[in-house]
Length: 304
Image (cartoon, rainbow, N blue to C red):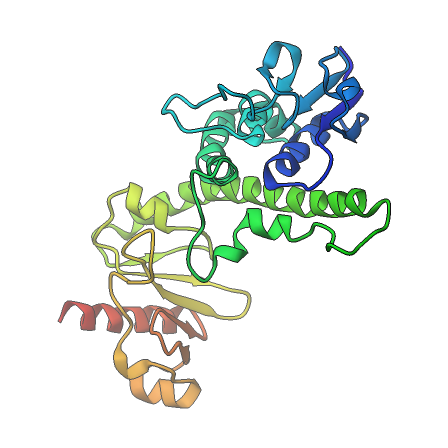
C-alpha cells in the first residue's frame, strides 16, 4: 500500500495534529499533506492516513481521530489526542526512521510517550491546564502562537503558518528523541563512574553529561558533588535532591558565593579556583587538581 496523502483538518491548528504531522511526514515523505474538512478527503481510502479529523478511530482504515462521542482512551482511562494515537501506531517506525538502535526502541518509545506525548494528549483534551507564570510558554501554547494573526487576510496565511510551525515542531520532537538516547548513553558512563567512586562523596565524570537519573537509579545517596572537564577548565557541581526544584544534597560553601579568580583562590586556599556561582550550585576551576581540591573542601563543610 502506497500512502499518497496525509489528511488533517483545515483552519486553526493545534499541537496534536502538528506533532502527528511530524511523525507521518517522516515516514511518508512523498505524501501530500492535505488540510481539509471536505468529506472527499476525510473519508478513508487505501492511499491516505487521516488524523485529528474524520470522526473515528480505526487503525485498520488508517483513521486516527479523537473527537467522536466515544473517544479512544488509554488503559488507565486518560484520553488520547491524535498525537497519542499516531505515536501508538507509528512511533516505533518513526524511531527506526531516526536510526534509533533496535535495543533502545521499546524504552525510548515508552519514555517519549510518557514524558512528551501524554502531556500533549491531556492538554488537547482539557484534562491538563498549564498554570503559573510559564503557562504561556508550554509547547502547545508556543506552537499555537505561530498561527496567523487575526487580520492576516492572505489566502495562503494558514498554510504558510502551518508549514512554519511544522518545522518548529519537528525540531522539538527530534531533539527530545536525541536527548533521550543521549541520556541512555550517559547512564552507562555514569554507572561506571559511580563504581569507581566507591564510598567517596565525589563523582568524577569524563565530560559534562546528564547524571542525576543514573545516580538515583544506582541508589548512590552518598554522592554529594560531581566534577568533570570542559574545553579549557573543570566544573564542580552539586547534585539536586529531587526531580523538581533546585535544592541540592549539599551546597558549596557560603564563603565562596559569587567569588572569582584571586578572591576565590584566597577564600578557598585553592590555586586555580576561578568562579563560584552566587547560588552555590556550581563552581569552575582551572584544572582537575583544583576541582578535586574544591570538591574535597565542599565535602568537609557538608559533613561538618
